[in-house]
Length: 267
Image (cartoon, rainbow, N blue to C red; front, side, top):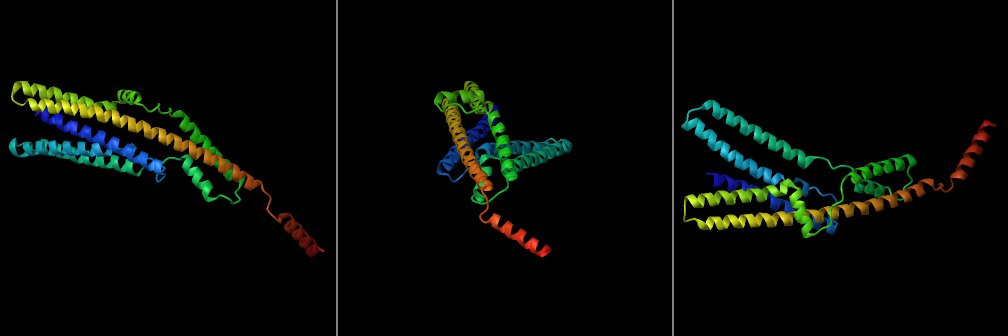
């Protein structure tokens, strides 16, 4: 039984690693192709393992509640387990919904897009000053975020060590190996299970390093994209300021003509 539970936990952890690696590579390709400018998929990779973990927990809870209700005759405890299942479902639904529908924060791309839409139009200086203030706020937020390290296999290994969520799958695989070894000692004849558990440890370590490296590549790509949008927004702001200060053609003649008509009407 402990080895079975450890296997279920490791499978959930492996799904986290695969989701982390797959979404990072997907977002990198979309950034490189220019078809996506906001990275929204990789930050919510925990949705997949959370759903898998919820299913595993629900399976154990339903089986335990059924045993309490029918085998041991404890309806009160069975009701408590049923209420816990409902709370788990509602909490999981709320977390997943809030993560999937949360609005994106202000970004260089949003400022750049507003300037592109009004490119060539005469705008007020107050509007331009407001955009510069937004850029200043985004600059301060970006400055508080540390720059990603240089992408390398060594940096990826260090990234795994410094991120607990990346070490937990490896720890779960090691725990599975220990439990399988104990079970093999107590019940000889299943040495192939130990070999499979060693393979699970190696797979978890490889996925951890590959996922960390993909995340570093994605962070570097996102930072470069932000800097490019910042440069474009600054250039568009300069053009907008020149347009706002440019005199309107024929404005002086129209004002002179209006004053002349006003004097004629007064006389």
